[in-house]
Length: 97
Image (tube, rainbow, N blue to C red; front, side, top):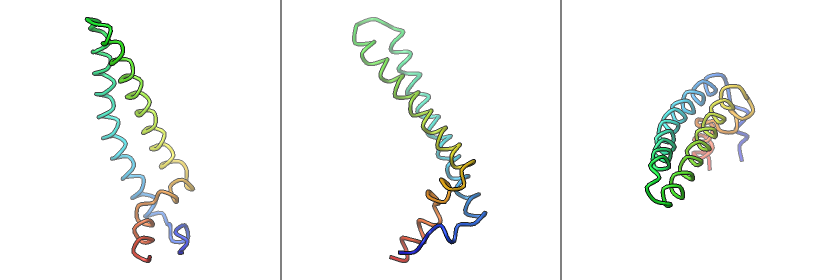
């Protein structure tokens, strides 16, 4: 098994940061609408089910937005994390197996 951290360089770092930022921004956009729809469902309060459906949607949306932001921050500021999730190194490893 090849050590994928050995070939990780600054170009790989930049590509991984770009990929994580694009995926993160798109994911945050989707989960923001999930949280917003949960909030709108919760605020209608027509039936008791509005609370049962709205609050979990808000919590799931907010939680996953935080998760995506944290992954973006780790990809940008943590060289070790970036090496472990490098999209180029993973492709090279899959081709060598």
